[in-house]
Image (tube, rainbow, N blue to C red):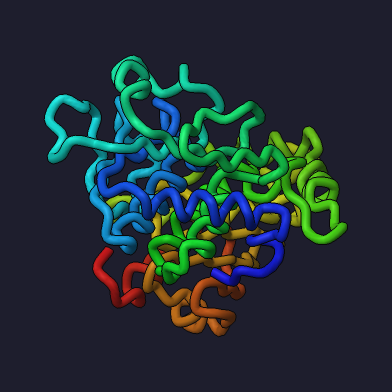
Length: 325
């Protein structure tokens, strides 16, 4: 992660330094976000855990409802406790992140909080609940952004695991940098995203609905494939341009490593687009048909109707991809 004035603005430095200093004051921490973790809360809790480990402190990560399934991919420095009944130590301080109010702690930790010191870092408005240090900055895009400043102020090295956690928080809390809480040196990212994203027409919406119903999978769900025929376009009064982005949407399906979208140009000619995740090389697959592109994004043309072209392309994917599907 590159820390510039965007990640460590001057206005935050005193508070970030105070929080970093407070984290060196105690030896044993409960690190928590709001009870029902979202991306920013888990990212902040995770990054804070990595920081405390770098500082040589003991800690537990706590959430009464555990980690949501859709966030299980986030690497964590320790398991998440769902109960405080059998902690491995007697805690001294709570590091409360992305909470807003103490009521969002949950009953168990809420009852314990008055007996412990508290450090609070948050981008929700409010007076702060920290008894030792507060860093409350509603102008921040995410609490993860504030944690980046704290890590910098602490003198700890940024690790890939820290950076990945913090980026998860930024992406989820800004809607993929779509929301109005995102800005960059005078650039209105929200307005730009509105211009890029708010372009859907009813015909395009109907085309995507139609194509979604046609998506099929192979190789135990590792390959997703779909054809957009001339009839699909005619029935929805759309064009090839309205397919833009659909193959990327297919790649977002859980477990899919290769996504293939075929677009019929005329009854005997079909173009295809390939996208890959993981170690798959779709440029090699495209080359089978004289196409090309990048390892993760490639395409080409098959001189067959869409249904026959789909069969040929799927066979080439299963034959050419060297990784076990």
